[in-house]
Length: 330
Image (cartoon, rainbow, N blue to C red):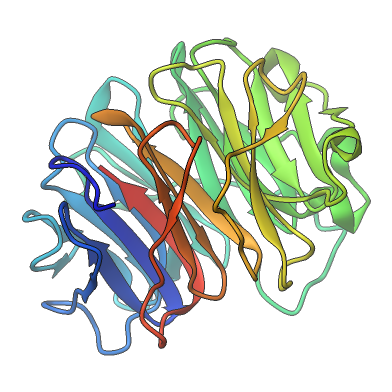
């Protein structure tokens, strides 16, 4: 089962490389033209209006392709700038972009990614000292209020800007001081629930009503024996549907995908054929063919569905693709 004509899948790995699965193919291509040797790819995003344009967050900063990954150019960014882990397009205005880094910073572009400047983002809670620097692991904006920007910090909670990144505040609140709930992995806003923030943590999902003014824990344990949640994504054609990827731990021998059809009130396992031997790290669907859903696991496993997650097929990545982090579909 190869994916249909307008679905390209891109996967990035820390160790190492950037890979593409093209329509009609079951084989991955390693994309190298213009990228550093043995590139570490932690973040990927496709332009919302032009799927030819793709951005990659690497250990060497942000790169952009104008031809679906065939060639790449490093963008204007400090030569010694921090590695890039996440991207965000401002809803309704793709000339405005944000990227998150490790060590933790948020940078903004107002020219479609040609150049970037650092915002005065603060890095949330300092309750936990980890062996790695704070990562801006994910970024989101409220589609109903595009200047409301939220950043998930690993391991430091949540920060928020209400003015498009000019000013930031720590809204970690009750997530502190526990390391389990400060350890954020996913963050998302959806048009179906204005001014509401959905997050995933080591301890499970939470809902943040009123722009994240409070954090309401979800009893994910009633739906899954595993409560370590990773990525979070909303269905691009049914905005009240949210996907969550899980694993037994950051590094584990189990992974799966769950779906909520009612904005985190309940969850169900997604389909048959997803038998992962490692933590499921990311999930996306194609906004131009929204029934096409794809997910990737840490150890290099990849799975695709063309029927909203009812059935799945495995697409194993090349052997040297480990520590898989990034996924883009479009």
